[in-house]
Amino acid sequence: MPMNDSRLSAPWWKTGVIYQIYPRSFQDSNGDGIGDLAGITARLDYLAWLGVDALWLSPIYESPMADFGYDVSDFTAIDPIFGTMDDFDALVREAHARGLKVVMDFVPNHTSNLHPWFLESRAARTSPKRDWYIWVDPTPDDDPPNNWIAYFGGPTWTLDEKTGQYYLHNFLPEQPDLNYRTEAVKHAVWNDLRFWLERGVDGFRIDVVDRMMKDPLLRDNPPNPDYVQGRDNPTRAFLRVYSERYDGIHDLIKEFQRVIKAYENRVSIGEIQYFDDPHQIAPYYGDYESDELDLPFNFGLMLQHWAARTVRQFVTAYDAAIPPHGFPNYVLGNHDQHRLASRLGWEQARVAAMLLLTLRGTPFIYNGEELGMENVTIPQHQVKDPQGKNLPGFTRDVARTPMQWSNAPYAGFSTVEPWLPLANNYETVNVEAERAKPDSILTLYHRLLGYRRRTPALSLGSYRPLLEADDHCFVYLRETTDQRRLIALNFSGEAQTLALPDVTESNMGQLILSTLLDREEQVDLHTLHLRPNEGVIVEV
Ligand code: GLC
Figure: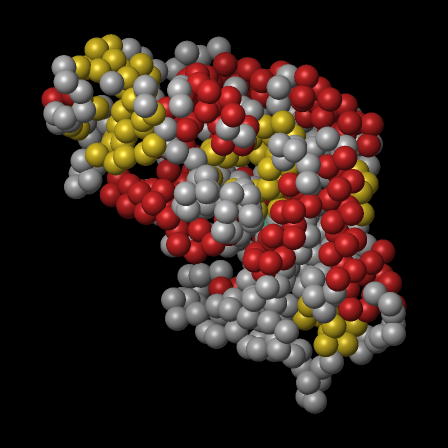
C-alpha cells in the first residue's frame, strides 16, 4: 500500500505528537496568578504554529487541590480556578478549528476525600456506598492492616475516628482509592467518562491506571532489595506487589477501553509504572488492536543512563517488545519529573528532542521543554507540591513553574505574582525571544515537528538500529517502502566520524536538519562527521 494512503488511514494518535499542558502554569487570563482555560485558548495559535497535533490537559475538574487537581471532587465539573464549562467548550471548539485534538486527564484510581461518594461512604459502616472505597478494621493492636506505604509518604491507611475503620489511599489521605470490585463504582465512573466523550474530547490520559486493583487479602508488600536508605525516596522501601497491579487489572482496563472505544477516533493513554523492562509494558496493549490501552506510557527514556549504548539498547528492546497490534510511544518529561534540560544539559536536550521526534512511536512533549526550560529551585517554605512537603528534596514543583512567554513582567504568564516562582532566566529563555532566533531550541522543535509531519517514514516507518557497537553515537534508519531517513545522534561531547558504507548505493545523502540548525548539505556516508553533541537527519 502506498505510504500516503496508510498515513491517511492511520489513527491520528499514531501519526501525531501530543503536547502536555499543566494548566495551572500555562497562561493566566484573569490575573489571579494561576493559569486557566481561557489562557490556554488564547495560546492555541502558538501550539498550532509549533506543530503539535494534540494537547493533553492535566486535570481541570473541580478539586480541593490537595494534589493540584489529581484529587477530584466532581468528575463532571470544571474547577472555578480554571474557569467554566463554557470556557472548556470554547477551548475544545477553538482547538478543533485549528486541527488540534484535546485529550483530558482522567483520575479513576481515587477521588478527593470531599467527593460526595466518599462523604457518603465515610458517613457510616452501613452506608450504601461503604464498599465504594476500601475500608478495613484495625488490627487487635489498633494498627493499620499491613505495611503498605503511600506514594507521598506515610501509611496508605488513615483511620476514620467516627466509624473506627481505616480507609486505603495510595497517595494522600485526601485521595481515597475507589474500590473497583464494586460494580456500581465502575458504572458511576464510566458515566463520568461518557460525559466528556459526548462533549467531544478526543481521548484520555488515564492516571495511574495500573493501580486500580489491589490484593483483596491485603498482604504485606515485600522489602525492596535495591532500596538504599538516605539515597532513595523512602516510599520505595517496599515493592508494590500487593498494593497495586493486582489480578483483574487487565480485565478492568479492557472494560475502561470499551467505554472509550464506543466513540470513534478517541485515544486511551494510560499512565502505568515507570518500567525499565519493556516486556512489562507490552501486556497493557492487550491481545489485539485496541483491546487494552492504545498507548500505555513508556517512560523508559527517562530511566536510562543517557549514553548512546544504553539508549539504543532500550529503544531496540522496546521497539521489539511492542506486539504487532500495538503502537509505541516515548516520553521525555512530564509534570512529575525534573526538566529535561536540567537532567541532560542544554546541548543534549537538543539531541533528545531529535531522538524523541524521529523515533517510531507517538512522542509526548511536556510544556516548556521546547524552550529548554530548566528546574527552578524552590525554597522549602515555598514548596506547594504535597510530595515535596512530605518528602523534602522530592518536590515536583521544580518542573511546574510558569510557562515563559516573553520578557514582560511575570514572563507574560500573568499580571501578578504567579503561584510558583518564575525561573530567573525567563528574560532570555522564552517563546518570543526564541521564536526570533534561528538557532534556538524552540526553532529546532518547530523544524522537527514540521518535518515529522511531512515525512511518513518518521511517523509510521520501521525502525532499524545501525552501528550497534558504537559507544558515542546512536544511529538508526526509519523506512517505509518509498522513504528512508537516517538519524545519527552524537551523545558525546567530542566530534565523531561515522562510517556507514551500506546505506545507499552512491553513499551520498542529503543532510536536511542538524540540531545546531546551521547546515544543510550533501554528506558522504563513508565519513559522516558529527560535531560534539550534534544530531542530524539525512535523507538517503
Ligand atoms: C500520577 C500523576 C501525579 C499525581 C498522582 C496521583 O502519578 O501524574 O501528578 O500526583 O498520579 O494522582
